[in-house]
Length: 296
Image (cartoon, rainbow, N blue to C red; front, side):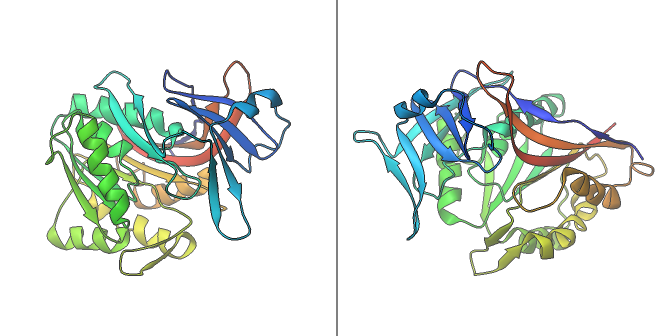
């Protein structure tokens, strides 16, 4: 079996740094703002407790709902930039939705990989399921990929469009779809649409725009089984990301191998933790898992 464990560690960049972590929380610099957020993986003690007093906003678990405590004068929305070898990407972040603010910095290595593939194979098609606020979609589209971006939240898809505009893309550079990911994937198969790149970022739990319930333990296998029918004969890459759902990265890799057996399809499967390097420290904070199939 052609399968290898490769942990991916994201280092900070000019607009983002993991400043400190510990005691169930992480302190991050996102553009102009310093944020204090929960993270269950940060079991150790904080390295520099004094730094945390400078946070511009803190996410608090409250008995009635969850909420951000934002310092006076701090805007509820603000931009952040990212750039690898391609054009610069700009994302608008906000305190409007739960503890997530509009990006997952640990995915930066995947954005760079998508841009690299897009440069080598201009015009190929990519499907991004559970696409969230669009970083992967925008990074791919910036290098000429034809991207279909699917998310169940109308508000989130509107943010994708705004981020695409801020990142210099034309209005028609992305096909954005507000739909249940599993339902839409089946519709694409009925239409006979094929993609060279597929990215999937399923949550542990979610709801579609018409109340469809997504439970990863019940629906993931059904979704993964559709992948071969969605891939074109010239397939390049399949990515499956995951968080806090109780599965291991190896489990994700085995799922991909079931539908894309490397003994029959020329490719390799890698899997592992997705982590962030803490600034000025050897400490690494693990934030998620991934598995991917890459063509040879």
